[in-house]
Length: 204
Image (cartoon, rainbow, N blue to C red; front, side):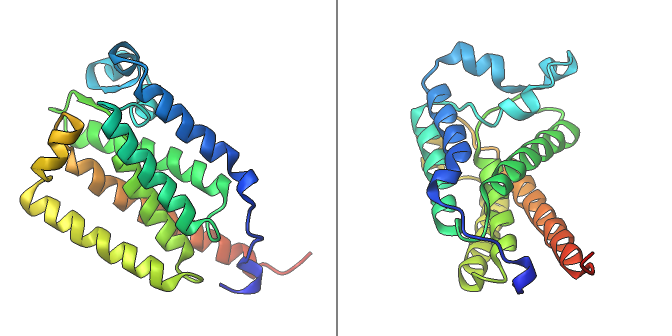
């Protein structure tokens, strides 16, 4: 990363919007089935113009274990890539990946009637973070990208681990992981191109 693409490292206090989002996910994880039903991705409800489910389906979960797994994974990503990804970038990427995963599920999987959980979005955030941090955190980014490719490859061949499905109390939609990772890579590359072009513009 050259000097024009660099940014001041945000303080932890500046990450309060990301922390607030994670707290909301934790609270919703214990809010009960009625709240989850009102917010979950549901194909029939989307057909009735309940568009908020495109986003909110990714912040409700099957149970407490499901919630904890995803919140811990998201928190770990923030800790690792805090120096390279700003709070605004985290939130924008979260929104874009969530919408991308929901639209992909809606278009490509008409038989999937219901989906909850942030795992697809977290795969996207991981891919976005790795691409965004590649110039300054090459080792960490490469390890994460390689690990994700191996995980996605294993899931495409063998499906999700039965132990994971037992813990979360439902079927793991591995396709959401793939769509999330793909959208995260695309968003990360587009963002990198935008930053590079902005940096190359002559000063006024």
